[in-house]
Every structure is written in C-alpha cells, then in structure tokens.
Image (cartoon, rainbow, N blue to C red; front, side, top):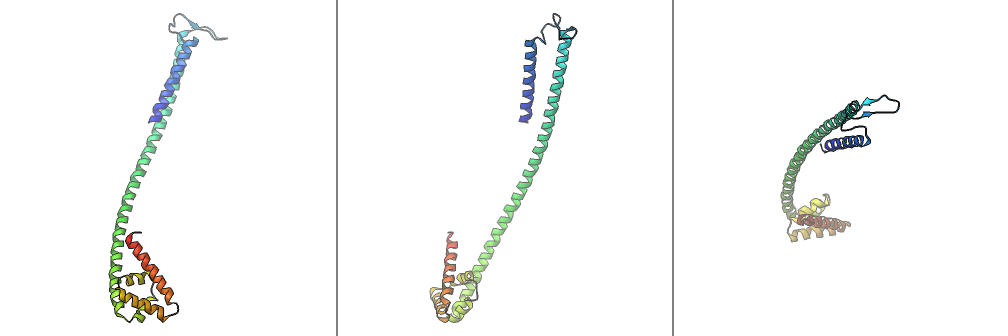
Length: 193
C-alpha cells in the first residue's frame, strides 16, 4: 500500500513538474485567447488546442500510471493474503508441535519413573543375591542399567558386588570403572549438570 502511495505521489509530482515546465517554456499560457503555438513547419494553431492536447497526453500518462499502481496493489494484496495464510498455517503447526512436545515430556517422566521403580525392585533383588552372582549378571547388562540399579542399593551391598566383580574376572576392574562412570553420569543428570 505504501509503495502504491509513493508511486502515485511520484507520478503526480512528475506531472506537476511537467506542467510547470510547459508554462515556463511558453507551451502553455494562462490566457489562451492572446497567443498561438507556432512550431517549425507547422501552421499556427490556437494555444487552446495545444493545451488540450497536452492535457490529454498528461491524462493518458496519469491513467497509465494509475493502472500500474492498481496492478501492483492487487499483486501486493495477493501476496499479503498468501503470507497471512502461511502465518496461520505456521501458528497451527507450532501449536501442534508444542502439544506434542508436552505429551513427549509427560511420557518421558512416566518412563523415567517406571525405570526408577524397576531399578529399585532390581536393586532389592540383586542386593539379596550372592555378590559374585550379581556381579556376573551385571557384566551382561548395559552400564547405564547397572548404574541405575547400583545407585538404588545401600553402600554395603554395592561394595560387595563391585568387589566380587573385580575378584572374579581379569577384566572386572574395567567393568567396575565403566559402571562407576555410568553412575557419575547418572548423578550429573539428576543434578542438572
């Protein structure tokens, strides 16, 4: 819309400048009865007909400029409507994404709670087992799962299982190191680090 107004102002300013030039150069006079226009090789015409011709030319130029402005205005309105539709679609998608993210967070909390409950149950079971048997079972689990179970045990049971893991196999120290690293990461995640 602003572009259309600027274009229209420029056209009007150009026409006003052209009229001013025409009056100063003598092509247009204020009193048409007194003067005539004489061009090289042209018969003398009354100034009024030259003024009418110039006004007609100016009107045609103004109508052409107005048509251009109208066409651009329609084009801008169409683009504005398209942008508005895209913005509405974006806002709708954004609401859906926010809703899905909220649902995902809820489910993650439920899964985490379920994992914690399962870990507590497993910790209770493994702490009652022979430490060497528990260590053997832990060697077949993922380090993160072992860390969750060990973190739910009391210190005495955890120490007995870790000691049994180191004593029963040659690579037991490596398992204990992996489990310890996993417990540290788990503790860091709980602290929000």
